[in-house]
Image 1 (tube, rainbow, N blue to C red):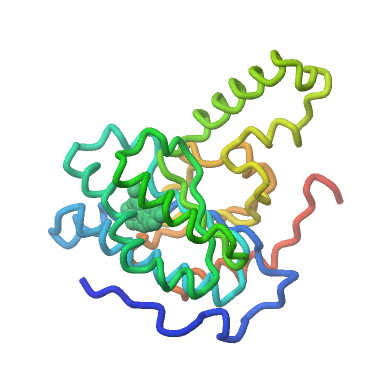
Image 2: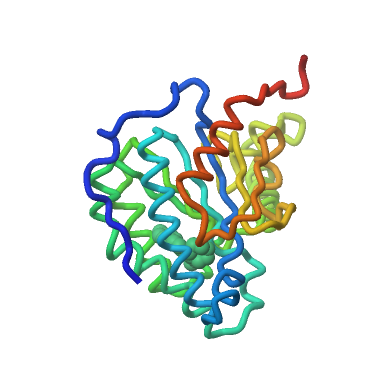
Length: 251
Ligand code: V0D
């Protein structure tokens, strides 16, 4: 497998869309890696590897287009049900990815964040991600947000528990609770909600991803499997987003 490298500072490449119409926050469900491999008679791991190449391409495009936040669903709380060797393979990807690309990401002013219960990940996975978060903390370009050991119901329950601890401590009363206050307990606290959700791989469902945060988000689905997803489809999704008129329940 040959991975394309970031060749120059992507931020210096021209922008395709005016900044006011482009989705500021794009969330992606990167589905279809296993099927991509199966279709070729290859092991599922080969599909995940190829999926990493697509991540690299799409991150480059997002930097070029001046997207503010890119949230990628890399590992769900349900993925623990998969065979152990597959889990072990997948959980090595963050460290492999960062050992190759972290310098490029830093050079391109990318900040790395994670949402999900990362405390339950193996130490080598968690430490690689925490190190990358630490080393990119002051960057103010693209926020590259990995959803890892993420499940939306888990996130909401966790938020509830944390919030009730604060209420019991007398930090505020139940009467004062509103949507804004509650959302500060979610893993995505302080992040703008996604403007656009992309799901590859042909399924038309949310699979426990960002249930609270997607309330007003535009959805874009494609049958293209994640390893085959390219800048072409990504820009097509952006273009369709630009044409849609968002009303947030108003007129
Ligand atoms: C496999 C397709 C990059 C989806 C993409 C641990 C399934 C490739 C990362 C990554 C995965 C995560 C954090 C980070 C740097 C890179 C990744 C996982 C799976 C699950 F800081 N790709 N990728 N993580 N796949």
